[in-house]
Length: 254
Image (tube, rainbow, N blue to C red; front, side, top):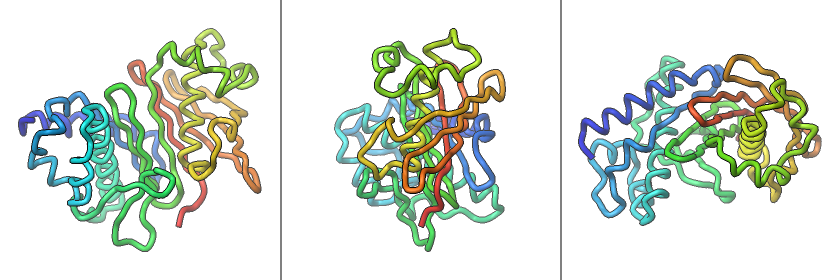
C-alpha cells in the first residue's frame, strides 16, 4: 500500500471519528475506520512501515497468523482504530499519548479486546466490524461496548431471536421496521460487550425499555440488563449511510 493511501486511511479515520465523537463521553473516545483503504495489503505481503510502526511486535506477529484477507483487514483496522482512540483521549486530557508500538491490544479469556499496557488501570476497549468498516470505543473509567452493523434484510430473518413486538413498539417510526430492528440489534450487542461479555447468554440478557429519538439520525435506548442485582444502561445510537453504530458504558472496570 502506498504512503499516500496510508495517509488517506488516517485522514478519513480522523474525519469519521470527529463526526461521531458526540457519541462519546468525557471519559471515552470513539474511532471509525474505512477498511476499503487497507484493501491493497495482502496477508502474504510485508506490512508497510508506516502501519507496522503503529503495532507492537506481539501484534505484528499475531497479524501474520491471519491468511484470510477479510479477517486480516478487520483485525488490522480494528487495532489501528482502537489505538487512535487512545491518542484521542490523551489529546482530550492534554497529556502525551504512549507510542502506539509500545502497547498491545490482545484478547482476554472471553475473547474480548484487552489493552496490554504498563498501567495500574488500563482503559476498557471494544472493537466491532461490519461490511468494510471498523469501529472502536475506549473508556478510561468503565467497561464499554461498541457495535456497528449494516442495515440489511438479514435482520428480518433473525428478528424473533433477539427482540419482540414490545420492544419494536417503543419506536416513534413504526413503519421503518428494518431500521428499528437493526438499532435493537446494535444496542444489545453493545450491551453484551460491555456488561455481559463473560456470560454464556446472548440477547436474552438485555431488554430495551425506552427509546428516545434525539435527532434526525440519532437515538438513545434505555436497557435493563440481567444480573445480581440487575442493572440499567444507556446506549447511544447513530445512523450513517446504511450503517448503525451504538456504544455504551457499564460497570467500573479493574
